[in-house]
Image (cartoon, rainbow, N blue to C red; front, side):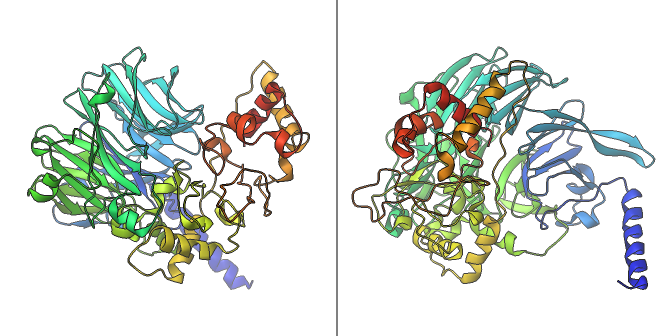
Length: 620
């Protein structure tokens, strides 16, 4: 490199460094220019708004008065709005909540921690900074602040539980048993009970407060999955959005009939309702599905329910005074009165991916639009977007971002009933079994595979027949989604580019303990995996899979395949169903019932050895 070039680069670096030091606002960290706000919260006095930006790994802090009350502009961008600050917090922040003292709590999923953000004095007045990091025993999904009891609830994955912390000190109080993959909270106004949604099966668990005793466990009828944010009605009921697996082959005609999935609302009596009191109502209409219902939010003064459909890119508004809940099994489509009587169900297309919602006042609300990289202020009386606050500093659409839009877009499927995300939740797996043509035949149902590290685990599909992942993307869009638009090679390549970004969720490293038994168990499990149990013969490091196919499992009589490509076991701790048929609900069931080592490697393991092997796998 020439001397002038070196000098120029040095001066440029110096300029950038001085620019960074002179500002009280840390530079944005925008991965591929994708910010992706997953959650939004507003402080008690409505002075500050915060978003958890999942892909950028940041939190945006927005001075509400100088942005949202500025009627002079309908489109605000961060480079022109000095009142928008962005702070780096870690890998995949998923939720934010304000404490009464004005500090902000951030749940960082992949770093399994909480971050505390506070204002600190500076020469220019103040600045925001991360002041505390609290390690968690699992990966957080949502936070719930209980001000009456000074408690903070955290829904945790791996291990699945609800963690209770002191809201001020953030010290652990206890950890509540839940179903699998607890996600969303809802509590009554008096905070005498709290509910949490769980997956596989779709359930709602209710606990009394402040003692945390379990009151009820209600399973949602009809194979419900991807349960969304519940809304509390009159402190006696909750309404939550769900997707229902109809268990029919994934054909174009079945999608159009509502026989593959339904997108429904479920009403439960809480905290201790009877199973016969449960009500379900479909929101899909013929030719107009509402893929991926994400959350419900109640407007008590108007007795209206706001429902976000992230796949259909819509906000739905239901007049509950005129809604008649079906008393029996829901029909394939929305009830006739929703379709025929004007005003009961209204909708507005907001674009992008509406993912979270907060009320500002009687008429206005904010939507966190994940794929729009923005906040949208909406007038609910007129159902119109009044203002958009951009959170990304770039208008450039990368190939990855294009693929991401395709992945979450319900319009890519026939009539908008589902998206790639429906089955592959956030690029992972919904844990559902579907009957697609991925294995060339129907009536050969398969568990939805995770897409984590998918680009590195050829060949593809359960049977390993597909050697070209781009062709596999085209086939999924055409033969599984059955969209009306033609599939282009560019779209398949974009979808592949996005899938290449999907990585496994690392297991939480168990803390060191005085009892050496845990460490001995992990070492024994590792030795079994790579030794006597013979697991590594098919599940080779580093991804714990191989590019070969093996006849190691029972197949359906009419299947044209009799061999399987082993799924990668890296990140297996984040899965809750196993094997191609999905009948195993734990790794213990895999090794004791369906995939016993004596049938694969000829070695019989004791119960203690199986425990050791499972313990080690859960750390991968």
